[in-house]
Length: 434
Length: 123
Image (cartoon, rainbow over all chains, first blue to last red; front, side, top):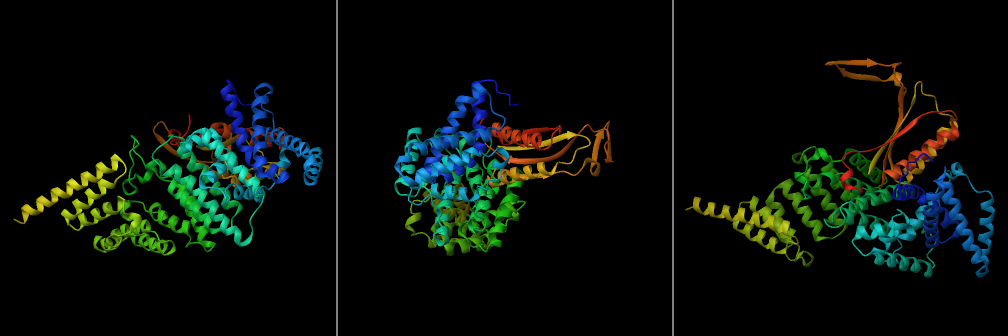
């Protein structure tokens, strides 16, 4: 094996690298044999442990994928033999498996396995709506992405034991409810797909929006979600919302390098250096969005959001942004899901497209929304519009309200600075009108 | 992390056997479906290309064939992966296919990480 492995750590990382490449095929093959996804996941882990024991001594085999598969299948066979007395069904499976073992596929023919259907089943099982969102996210990262419990714990800023327990419970729930191996069809499929997309988007946003946590694991969450998005678009290729979500994630992900300055301070979209946006990712996002539209899903929840982000991605400079189109897309989105936050975003876009007066009318209409009662961006947007309308004293008051609601110091300071600017404009106004 | 794998072999580049082509196609298909391979391409022979050079303060455009070139790039693939180890594992798998399906073939698969991504990831 031509891989330089000097220390134990190197060997371990090498093994983990190989295992992660093979993990999707291992778990899908085993779950097909065992008709039990949680059990297949256990045995896939056992194959990793076996590799960690054997390879540092014996060297990494020439065809590590075939070795892992053979080991995992042997474990599966042992398991079925142990349980043979339990049920006739298991006995039959053990027989099938023994037959299959005699003609163990070599590595190349293993490439022939089309794991698409099985992978889809795996994703649907891990993201079953019976499980909590947190459990679905942990299970997806573990079973589909091959992340270790420790990595998931670090990414979500939760104790490792908590994640371990969450995973064990989730797997037990699946086994106990007889949901360990099933794929929804027809109408149920669309419903269940929503649950899958929700989890993938949750994982992406956990990495994308939170400005806390392990510096390097958070972008990794974005990448895991992107990878799952790409998997979904290739195996559920006729589902427009899968393409819409992938487009949204690729387009948002394209700005990661431009979103913070050298000190980690956030940079607002309109102020970002667009040369740092990732063109390869933008192109992939645009392609995914076009696919969603071709499939008739241009008006979907994710596709509409992706279309909004695409307007920014396609603008060479901030000034070139197509605000009327963004405002119209927010209008479509607001018609699809009633959300005062979306309405507030629409107001911002209207402000850019038509001017502050039109936007202020929308914002004032949101004043009594209970959901926005302690949302600092409502008075913050209002302050911005009033400032543009030269209603400085009202702007100052709005910025002060916003500062009082702001969650973090950085934002509060910014809002207080804007309040001060507005206050100075008031006194200037007063002196000129004397 | 984003990686580029670049395959080079000595001139003149031999045409891959049908068996190798098929195996590579399957591997690429698996990697695309796994969401790991984000771009790939094979390159036309060096003779059909051109080189634009700057040397001794002079700029020149030279068309192929480049008989003096020792090695030629045959193709590339771009991957989104978690670690260099994953990139190496994939390169090993890719080269093993050449070893199996095109005996006598000599070549190199160079694995390189993209700049500008390192700070966001481990190591």
